[in-house]
Image (cartoon, rainbow, N blue to C red):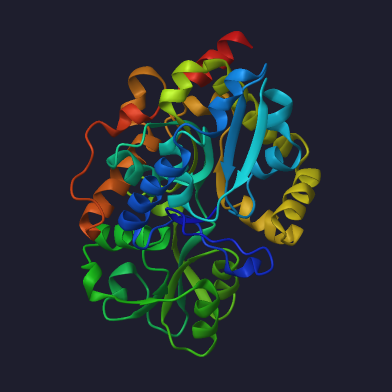
Length: 367
């Protein structure tokens, strides 16, 4: 999964090799604020609540081009429409700020495939939202590759080296965590801002010593006179990176059954992938516009959560464990990172209160 903080993962279906991730966030503060204001001005009093005059409510679900993930199955096979007793509209967004601005205005009820950093930025700006489904935790699909001849044997050896990465992305979030844990000042590393495609070129002409990037470039450069020094898996306690589904919490209080039906649709997609992996990869690849083998590689880089797994410590948690769940930790870690970058003036209080597993619990209880 791959979005820039506010996902400035602008996915190009014609250029699948240059996708971003669910967490890139250059200029997120300005972009999000502007998008929220614009969405409120345009969205107030419109769209979905016009459904009050019809028999079925209108529900809009947002998604982004995050490459391969089970949620793609839900979109491709119209699982949301099949599960939800509503007129479902699935809307594509090319950036996180636009999608979360729509959530703020009430024009968008659900957003899928959003990274934890953009979620934190929205919370800090008063957007009423809750995390209700943990889609994936990034594990081995993104990481730090170093050139074999660069003399880099450990994270400490990165000091003074040229490292290619997308600044303001999940890669910077993860790399900073690795450096900090190793006692290396992030400022002592020469970070070169470049797209994944540019990283591939710079690697080939020996312009960089290392790169923190996601698949497919991560896999390609690690096999081109390179070696893997670390992945997201190694820093998931310090800087966990997620793809999440959120809901407008004000709307959810009034429509709990529709929230539960949304969760059932997400679980249907995960179940289909786990029970029919080959067929699922075909569906995902076709919808995402990528080769099947690339879809397989990307999917292998996640830990994917189904219905009962939402209560795991590495997902939403349950009851008293929510505050210490890895999703809650991911929000706090992202907030700290954004504050250090100057993107947030202060860290929002009680971020764990925006992680809500009770809808999942209700689904399991009534199943």
